[in-house]
Every structure is written in structure tokens, then in C-alpha cells.
Picture 1 (tube, chains in turn brown, cyan):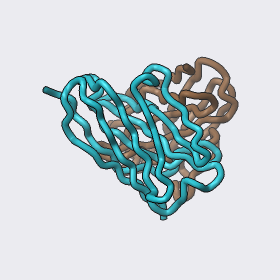
Picture 2 (cartoon, chains in turn blue, red):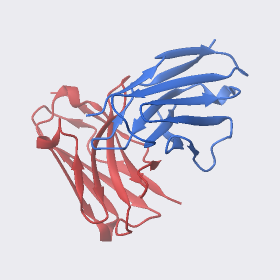
Picture 3 (cartoon, chains in turn green, red):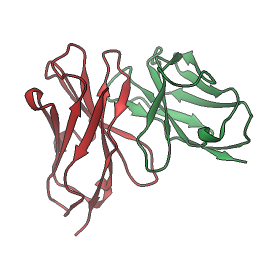
Length: 107
Length: 119
């Protein structure tokens, strides 16, 4: 299985901050990476697919970059609604695998 | 508008078999490229991919759980059924089904159903 490692595990930030979350794959996954946002008690919500494509309806302050083994999710200016847990997922090869999550907290 | 909803027991005993149904609308599982996946999440932990079934009945399973999982589809009823045998307390989790788009992304998810394994 391909291992996905996110960093940091927890991130404290303030409204208006620019934040970046990193996801590393144990082997190349080309650009087959998605990012999800999850709030407590809710299902994950797709933000980014194919590493850098913004899902319809997702605010443009979210952006994704990377290919191969290193990927980033950036939120350009944090809004109160953005405090949540974020997961990366590779779908280059079966089984799909998820990162362990990054919890974005209010500083 | 694509929607999915999971249904099934909220409590199962150890060694029992779990059967969950994903009932969906807004798409057909006979459309080329489309799939439905199952993902679970133990309380406070990360997401874990379980299985995927495609429009052509191609099925993929997590290797670590393959011996315990079966996924089937009923295209006419817009349902996908997940069966997991020999349930254990470590299988306690929220189980989600999700729409798999042709390009691989899970773009729509069900609300999830919490399954507790306890005697």
C-alpha cells in the first residue's frame, strides 16, 4: 500500500492567516491526489482533486500543488468556517489511502 | 443532485456479520466510469478506504480486509451493499459510502452511519 503522511498533525492559526498543509506519498502517485475537509460529525467534503483542480463550489482561497510524492494544500486567508480537519487521499493505485489528517485549530 | 445514504444496524455483536446498504440517487451505477466506494472512520481516527464497485461490476478491496468484505450492487434499485464478516470491536466506526467519479475522485458522500461492535 502507498503510505500518505501529512504534516503537521495539528496547526494553530488565526483568521486571515495563510496556511499550508503538506502530504507526502511513499512512492510516486503522479497527480492522483485529493484533499478533503471534515468537520466534527460530518462527512468529508472534497476540496481539491488531481492535486490542483478546485472542486466546483469550493472557495478560491483553497489551492493545491504538487506531483509525484510531495503535495500541498494552501488556504490563502483563513476564514472562521475553515477550522476543521483536512485529509489527503491518493487514488493512483489500489487500495486508495488517506493521510492521518491535519487538525486546523483557532489560535 | 447526487445523494447517498447509508443504512443498517447501529449495533452488532462480535463475530456477527455486518450488512450495510448505500441507497443513492442522482446518478446511475450503469454509467460508464462511475463507482461507489465504502470508507470508514473509527471514532477520533483517520479515514480508511474499504472497497469500491464500478459500473461494470469490477470490484476492488482493501488487501487487509479482503477476506472479510463483499460488495455488490443492485443497479435497478440504486443500491450498493457492503458485507463485513466476523465483526470485532476494532471495527467500530462510522461507515460512509461515496460516489466515485470517472476520474477517481469521491465527490459526493453519504452522511455516514455509526456502527458499534459490542457484546
